[in-house]
Amino acid sequence: MRLFVGLEVPEIVADALGVLQSGVDGARWRPEENFHLTLAFIGETDRHGFEAAIEALSTIDAPSFEIRLSGIGFFGDKQPRSLWAGVEASPELNHLQAKTEQALRQANFNLEKRKFKPHVTLAYLRGVSQHTVMQYCSAHGLFSCGPFPIDAFHLYSSQLGKSASVYNIEASYALSSSR
Image (cartoon, rainbow, N blue to C red; front, top):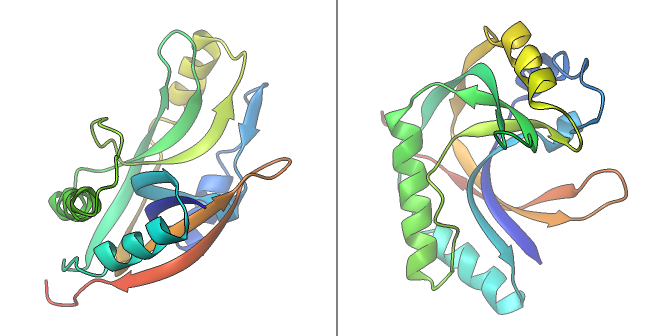
């Protein structure tokens, strides 16, 4: 199984993100049902790893909070790889992500060492110029959506599909309501 931990995007937010999905030739726009915010990418694992992930994530205790999407950006500098919607700075989100990463590392998962950059991927890019991407980001740079509540996080499985991956929530973990 290919696994990751993430936050679900409410339908109304997915609709707002979907409106942004045009105007870049060579973009492979993500289906709205695939919009999410990744907290940790686990990768390929067997049944034992799946069980270990479920157990590790069940130890996390964190409060619910709100986030707001803000701005548009891209990864890949001179060779843009993806377009994304950013997330406003959130100490609560950073806390949840750090606790998620810590729990998974303690369960012996070898996670990526990249700095956490919260975002929702809009499109994957191939052969799109930096100039084109910068024009798109400039045109949509004032995008903002939310705030919206985050009261749970999820363990997702990912199966590669012909046009897009199929994501399934395998387990959900409630955040405490005390703020």
